[in-house]
Length: 420
Image (cartoon, rainbow, N blue to C red; front, side, top):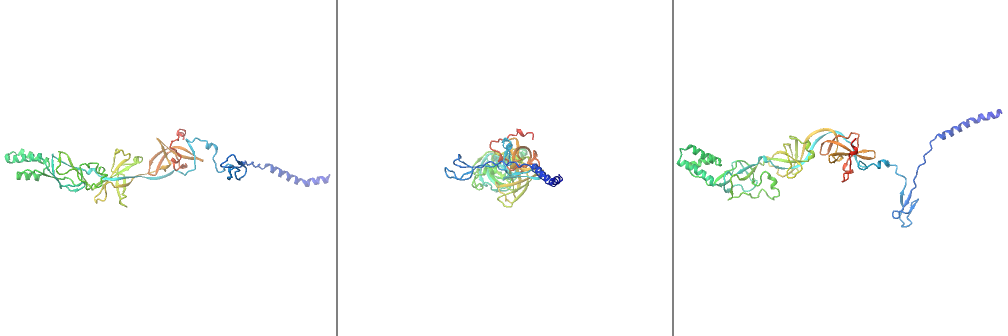
């Protein structure tokens, strides 16, 4: 009996060790049986052929292709994501960006052209009816100076007024009031004091009177009115084109004979996109570059903002006054301009990241593996960027090109996102 008890004591540690191993084995988690879907191979031309291993089609001999197998572990897209409505969510893998908080100089880049400054336009008109006997201006844009003789005219009215003065001088020299009235009439008709004194001394009338220019500049034909260079476009050689006024032509009282424009004063007409008009103000600095004159930069300012569109144009026109004393600038030359508006700090995104749907502006916000449409509010717009005032934070990720995920039907619906 004692020997049996002694044997049991020797075997007890072995039994305890065996029990511990069994318990630890029971505590180990059972590996889940991996669900491996069987791989099938089929023929691209004969889909009824199904094989468990690769090979050739018994009908056409083409190599079999894999029909289906295990699902891709890298997809990471569940069924709930796929079933979301496409009017507010799109699954895609495209380039993304995050909004940036920074200060941006709001420069407006635009283009335009150089034109005559119509403030310098002056008209030479006929003060009385008559016939042009002699023209001293032969072609458009001929340069003349103040006091230069431009044409001679014969007018019966002027001859009659001179003869009245001569008659008073010869028959009633004591009628000083009438004499003064006759002289004043000739002055109002355009005669100079020297011409009137010559009539009084010689007692002879001028049958043809010289007309002198009271202004200086380049001569435009009467058809080149305040639309100036625009009406001249399309002519091959405007500088040498003949004038509409010719010798021997009769003119009426008040008729415009010539237009004079000062070539030393021009202005640049800059066309501004309507999206940039909100940041446009008078007296903002402007840099003007001329492609025809490489390296030529003219600094100016916004001198005038036209209050209306011209000739069906849908861009706002801005005038920048220019000086052309050296005649280096040419009318109708194309120019590029940068208008320096202001510096604004805020949350900025590229223009391409925002899409305008009527009165609503949206971006595509990344949530997981999909992009959801999100309505935002915007502020100032630069040439490349736009400031977001409400709807986005620095932690959000949006698509770089919003138009990429939008089709031509504008299927996006914003009603479901009013609470965002």
